[in-house]
Image 1 (cartoon, one colour):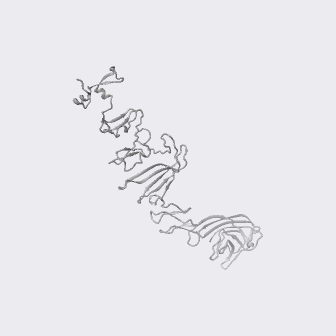
Image 2: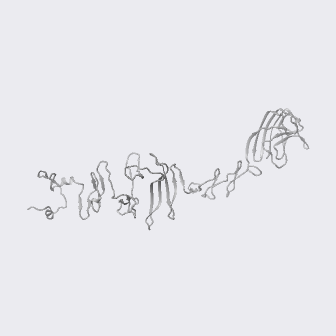
Image 3: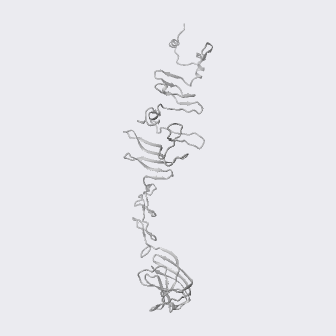
Length: 434
């Protein structure tokens, strides 16, 4: 007596397939000549690794082994109401050559679904993301690892296009956001709140193969305000919103004074200070341990010494005139240190000229305005007529020195043109105050 398949299953149900089980099947075009039998061992070898069981009460596909293997094509979740795919083990593998695995949530635009990895719940009320990675009880949500023998590492690309059609081009524009890395923390009240941001935006003219950009770094202060801290421009210039402190290797200030020297601050970590620029020719003197150095003029009693070395042209005059005077040698050098000028001259006449009167010689620097006249002897002279010793006398605020003869302590007088010949020579050095 024949039985239906259902009656046989009720009478003798089986929960496994044995290798020597025999199955009766029919093959297209399903005529009598196309019936065949297959053993349980061959049936298992020609199916997926593991059993595929359809549970009609939940419409879930349950794979009771390690892998879900898709030879070609796609597995579309909505065809399995309510759309759950459960793996009791490890992997989803595409065996198609160079094949991709596409996870595409239903919908588009603002209503498109979310691909969630790590857990099934949304991360708080986030509906703006397309992919969510989350971890429970682990320090990190995801990791990128590269295994390649070339000199290459893991790469994260964050790309932006103005095109709304995948596979087509749409150039970005100046000052357009390219990427935003937002670090957030749970405040325990409202959810995830931004603590810092790294923003990359275009900065300049976009052209073929060129997208100039800048990177901006933001942090949130204790009042909850996100503020720009620094910007790395497309010219590799780092702009700080606040001056870099001395303790961190900076100056502690955002601006300086042009051409001014810089001194440390009032404390070891205080902002640096600018000195005044002073005036030309001044020199710097210490202000002590608690004041800035200052610029002072290098003249006068007690002032720092200013050293000057230079040359000048010494010349003779008679009664203030120098008509017809010519020289064979006319050389002068002087050095000034503070308020003392030291002069060295060598003068040889080839003609004394026709001027008459008191004999004088010009000075390189005007003598000091106050004090007694200064006198100095002359070391070497030739073809000069005088009695006793030959010397120079320099008056106050004077630009010339007068030649004198010193017969005795009480007998001295200025010399005139009559003491000089057409071939007179003077070689001497002397110092005077200025």
